[in-house]
Image (cartoon, rainbow, N blue to C red; front, side, top):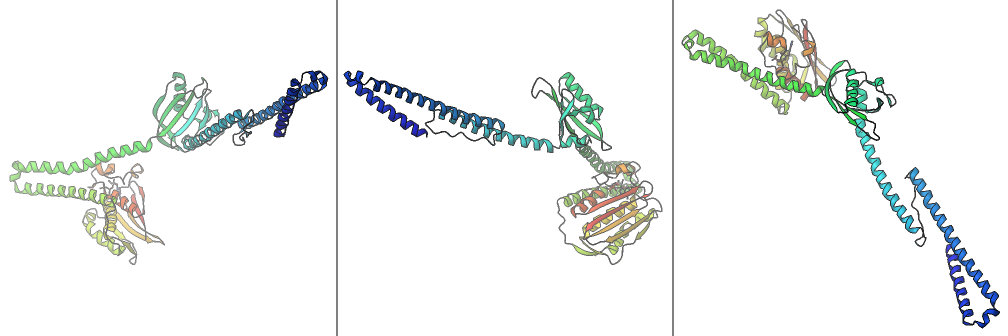
Length: 454
Ligand code: ADP
């Protein structure tokens, strides 16, 4: 259609131009053919008007096309198409600019969407609680960790901060941030899930859009980290204490023996005995530390063998009998004689000896110890029950730490020990993919149960 018009207009123009030239070349005939001349002028004007009209129609149509695509683009970039015009269309350069702009914006938008999606995932899964409070003290955003920390059921946001924040101190810190227009960082103790947790609250004041302030609140649970720090400090203090005690005794008695007391044969004998026992204690300590480190590095290379559990336990009991007799402790082994388990003798010995020697050390005069075992489909378990002093609940999770010794055993000097026995047991059980369970009541007794895969 478009080309037909163009060709028609060009031919018409050509014929008119030729006729007009002929008429000009023969001026005396002009007057005779005046009507022809006038007719051609009309025809020429008509052709030019038709061409302009066509141009105008074509431009309006292309403009409408661009504008429709523009509208689509503002609605959604997904549905917008490129505007395709023939290269000789008058709006062709504009359509090219438009298409380029559309491609750039689409690319930017996809990049933005991707970025927003990753930020949203990050925000939702951050281990730190994050919430945003606007200038009207409404919570406008809150991630999963924050909902959990604040122990609230999810509600639709925005909502008033008082509906969600039940900790007065938190509301107070947010209020201070808005009022003083400065960020605050403070560690506070909050009751979460019935337990005291150390939470670091950080507030960040910002103005995301207009001149209205918003406060982003970060909630970071420091409890585990602080507990670990405390454990590390205790470990160092306990370890140095355990090493220092025998060394101090050894040095003290050596000094005494170097003085006049050294001449007294009876005293010398007694002091040398003490030095020997303290040196043995230090050797035990070093051995325990070494075996712990070996277990931790998986350096127990011995082969498993089939061990009759009852007999094995009875034999180990012989080595503890002397100290048990001093307290008049009764020992009862109820392990069925036919129970056999697969283990390395060293591992089993470390497990049984540590549990049995504790049962003796922390038992009362005339106390009892009972050892029993059970074999199930995939696991076997060993239970050591004593009628000893028991372990306070507050210490029950800590006794498996290295060098940790219960207050009673340290202060009242109930028993000698390194504080490494249960750490060794727990480490071994862990290495063997087993479990250790403790049940204890102060003044009544303690039962340790270890469960190991067959
Ligand atoms: P140690 O006996 O050398 O102190 P352990 O690691 O074997 O070290 O035990 C750690 C602590 O656990 C002990 O100091 C003691 O307070 C407590 N404990 C362990 N076994 C018993 C038990 N059978 N009865 C009471 N307390 C126990």
